[in-house]
Each structure stands twice: as C-alpha cells, then as structure tokens.
Length: 373
View 1 (cartoon, helix red, strand yellow):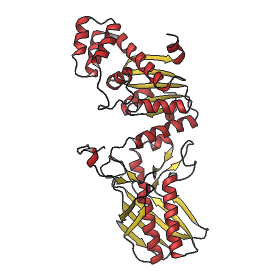
View 2 (spheres, one colour):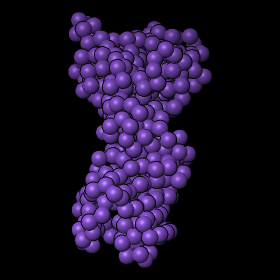
View 3 (tube, helix red, strand yellow):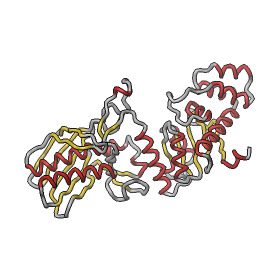
View 4 (spheres, helix red, strand yellow):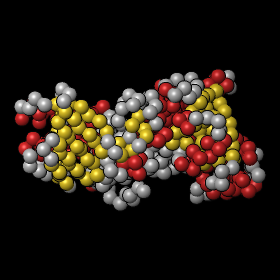
C-alpha cells in the first residue's frame, strides 16, 4: 500500500536500498565473526561515494558463523520493502575467497533477460559488488586467509514479493536485492521505469513479439481477458510512462504493441501526452470536443464536452448517447501519437476500456498507413 505523499518532495527523506542494507548487515556479521563480539553499528560507502552508518537490530555469533539483521528504512518512499528485515549470515568456508548466495525470502531467477543469470539468487550486479567488495575490505583489514560464505535473506521476502513484479519477471521465492545508487529517492520515477524496461527485456528474451502495455492492474486484467492465449510475460504495467514504455519496446525491436487503458489517461495519449500522470498535463476538453465533432456529435453535446470536468465524464456522455465512433477515433489518435513518439517501426493498437471491462474503442495503426495519409 503506497503511503500518501504529504510533504514537499524537496523536504522528503531519502532512504537506503536493499543492496545497501544487505551490505551493512554483511559487514556487521563479518566483523562480529572475526572479533567474536557483537558489532551493532557499521559504516559503509555507497556507490555514489556517500558514507553512511547503519545500526543493526540483532547480531548473533557462534564460533564459525555470525548473523546480523538490519531494518530497511526507505525514507519517505512508498517502497514495498520499507521496514523489511534484511539479514546477512556469514560463515567460514573451505572454498577460496568470497562466495555469495540468497537465502529465505530472496528470489531466484528462472527466466532470461534479467541482469542476473538464470539459477542465481536475485542479487543485482551493483549490490553484489557492494557486498563482496565491502567483505573483501574487512578480510584484508584483518588479514585472514580463510574463505568466507555470505547468505542474504529476507524473512518476509516471499510475502513482500507479491506486491512487486518479481513473479511476472520470473523471480521466484522472494524479493530482489536491488540498488544502483545506494539511496532510495522519494517518489522517484527511475525505479518504476527500470522495472518497465526490465519487463520488456524479459518478454523479448522469452520470444514475445506482441506486447501489451497497460496503465494499471485493472487494465492489465482486461488485456489478459482479451488476449488469453498470450504468455504472462507479454503483459506489462507501464503505469503513467507511455512514451518510455513504447521506446523500450522499440529499442528491443518489438513488432506490435497493444495499449490497454481507460478514457482518462488515454485521452491524454491521444493528445500526444506521453506521461499521463494526473499532474503531467491537463486533459484538453477542446481536443475531445474536436474528436466528438469528427464523430458526428451534435453541437449541443460538443458544447457540453467543452464544459466537462473530467475525461471520464465525457466518456460516459458518449456511451449514453451511443457515439461509439468517438472512441474509435480517440484510439486512432492515441495509436498515431505513439507511433510519432517512437518514429514508427512497429504496429500500435489502442484499446479503451470502460470501468466495467467493456471495450469502448479499438483501433490499430501502422507506420506505413500513417505515412500514406
């Protein structure tokens, strides 16, 4: 459940990634093992160069292994892993050097297309490097010759993963250990965009040539019901980032994209707005009135559209009056705007759904058909 944003973004508190927390827990566990005393506070260096101190929640020591637990603080970011327990268990090993794996609650990769090979724990490259380099610094400082085995676990990770895209991406059994900067920027779009790009890559690696981009969970459910024979990887929640998602598809040479959403957001796409967040750009009722005129709507209704409060209100009015061609024209405009955004090279279908799951409009445009106009 996302926390409601009540502060000015400039005043919002940054948090730390699962990768940073796993690194800190590893350092605390390794130092505790080597010193045979509980180390409750450690300082690590983030990828951005910032030094940060982490306090451990629990540390447990035996002669040959130690375990440290830290509680992730995501700051003011609506992060599914906020307050999650991140645990690192460190033990001596007969193998040379440092080995790293995931334990309970850390997912395992089962599909190609991710930055981690199939079969490995879902610990992304930057956190993997942070953990091993930090551990190596401690080993060098203490001058030990033994091998060290590190296991990162998240006790509630399997439950937390249900709130993420991991299952769709083929990450089974828990969350991913993530982070490129080390910090979590409150309400950052970067993380969501990264997950969209990753989902597109996974779909393509799994031989999906027709992808379905939806604005949310409900529209995704509708898309799946319309195209039940397509694999789950082909369905991607793009959120508000229509332009970014389309460009991600173009970069991976996807041949056909179907956009599925509702009247409010797709009326913006039809205008050429490619980030459809409520604050990105207002709905142009003049534009909707123009589309209505093209659909043969009476002048009185056109005037009513110009004075409407929401795009959904306009949609309801068109449904009640039986102007189905209004939605078809809106879908055409949306598909054309998408093609313009990516400079062609694919086929785009737009489907506008009602809140009840009925198809209101459905049109496909190819770059060739657009150029021939």
